[in-house]
Image (spheres, rainbow, N blue to C red):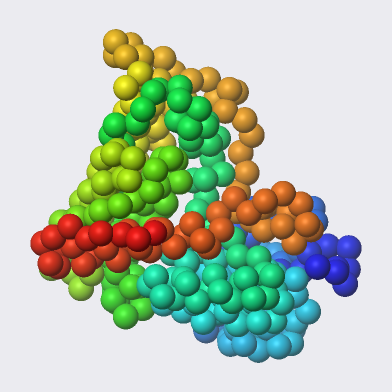
Length: 336
C-alpha cells in the first residue's frame, strides 16, 4: 500500500474502554499515527483525540464513522464498536481499500465472517482480529511445545476464564442480545475459545454445552465441551459472575502437561509424566507483541497475519454450535 506520508495513518471506529489500550499500543509504534476518531459519544471521541495529541475538531472527531472514512485520508482503521456492528464496518473499510484491525468477536455469526473473508479476498485486503493472547510469549511457547511433540500426544485440554462480567456489563449493550450477539461466551469467552483452538493441532469436530443466564438477558456462565478430530477432549468454562479474575489453561499429553496461569509469574509450568512441576523461565519464551503492531507491519508489507479472519471463523462456528447445543440439549457436528 503506497503511503501518502512517512507514517501509517489510522482511524478509530468506536472509542470505548478498549480503545485506550489500542491507542497506548499504537503510540509506542514510531511508524503509526492515529489521526481520527469516530463515536456517537462525542466526548469519548474527543477525550481520545486529546490523548492522541490531536486538537478535537471537524477533521479529527466524527459522530458518524462513515463521515470519517469519506473525509480523512487513512491507511487503516481499528473497528472497536459493539459486536453486531463489526461486519458492516469491516466490509465498508475493505471496500475503501483500508486495512482493518477488529476487536473480538470478528462478527456475531458464521455467515457474517464468511462474507468478510470473501470481501477481504476479493480486495486483497488485510483484516487482523484482536486476539491478543496469540501475541503473548506464554501461549506462543506452549503452542510450539505441543506441536513439536514435547508432551506427547495431546489427550485433554481445558481452559477457564472468569471475572465479574455480569455486574460490569449490566445495563450496557453487552447485555442486549441484538447488539452483543450473546453473553459471556461471545464476549470474554471469545478469547478463551480462540486461544485453545489456536494452540491445539486438531480441529473441532463436535460441540455440546450447558449455559446459565442467572436472570440476565444473555448467558452469564458457559461450560462447553469439544471433541477434536484427533481425539483430544476439550473443556472450556466461561464464568461471568466470579468475584475475582481467573484465567487458567492446561494441556495434558501422554508425556507431560503444560499449564498457563495468567494470574501468576512466570505463567507457564511444565509437569513431567511423574507429576513433578518446573516453572518455565519467561526469558525462554521470546518477546511479546500485540495485534496493533501486527496491523502496522502488514500495512508496511512485513511479516504475516498472526490472527486472520479465517481462523476467527472457527471461533464463531464453535460459539454458534455451543448456543445451539445448549438449546437442543445435543451434540452439534462441525464442518470447519
